[in-house]
Length: 116
Length: 115
Image (tube, rainbow over all chains, first blue to last red; front, side, top):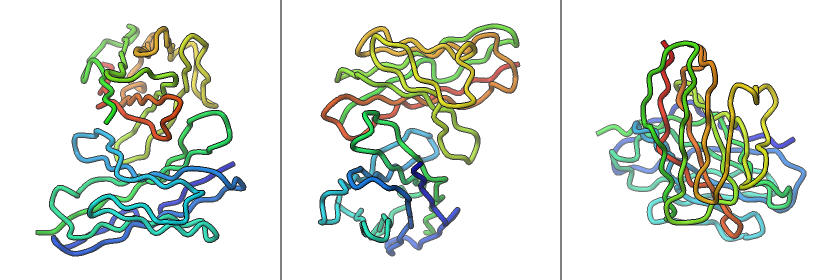
């Protein structure tokens, strides 16, 4: 069975600085998708970025980028020029591309605090 | 992006009564919907997966007779908590996806309080 691990329960970053949130996963599959979701205090889950495992190029979305290391099964999220609005819980998620279900496996989350 | 709504956003009910939560995909047809439960400061726990027109698939440990899920159309799924008890108090979140989309889109959640 697949597992997703987020080893940092909480992280802090100074406004305008850069922070990296870590995520590792375990799977025997070769084709899958990885996601980072943000959950602010409103508790609305917001998709931040996604990565297809077959793509070697790291995904980027404005200030958000990932470092996808398939062999190491690592999928970290880098937030550049951190803003107060980035403060939230961040969840890493895995989805098989071949199992026939769209079910996610979530990590336990990292709470990001942004300091003014 | 795809929009998913949930109703109600908050509900308080008495112990022993049933409560229904609706999840709607507003601008796409959701072939698959998911129901999660989230405890404070915890991750999302998948309760069940529902495909339009077929019975839901429940995760291990989730009582299917207590948490009734119906996915009667491509835009609507409902979760009914039957004979609710205080321990059912939680934050319930639905999400939706469809073929061709890799990701799930989430509703804003429903806070259920059972008194």
